[in-house]
Length: 124
Image (spheres, rainbow, N blue to C red):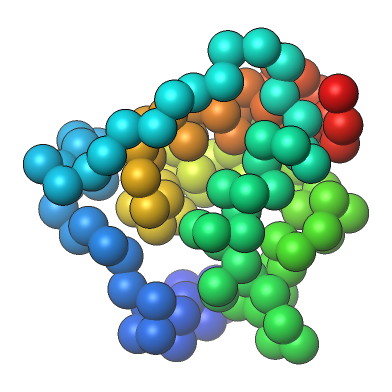
């Protein structure tokens, strides 16, 4: 079902880089990765707003998964669990990894660290 619903978003919001999703492209810029504790509001919400909510928001979010609020994101997050669906989907082998707009590896690492190491904290 998710694969069927992704078609519409991919058509309207194609990946900015469709090369090998496990290796950075020459046009991918690097953004600094926060090394301290991560929290949803200051660190993750801006990433989700730029890279995820174009498809995962509104009255009919793709995959029936909205990412516009902390509560909505937490539907697919188990704090401290690396097997949370959000972590799996955003890692290099995940289906959503290629939609990170810049520094995919850094952003994927931040999602995992936020969920696993920082227990998906909302604020610091």
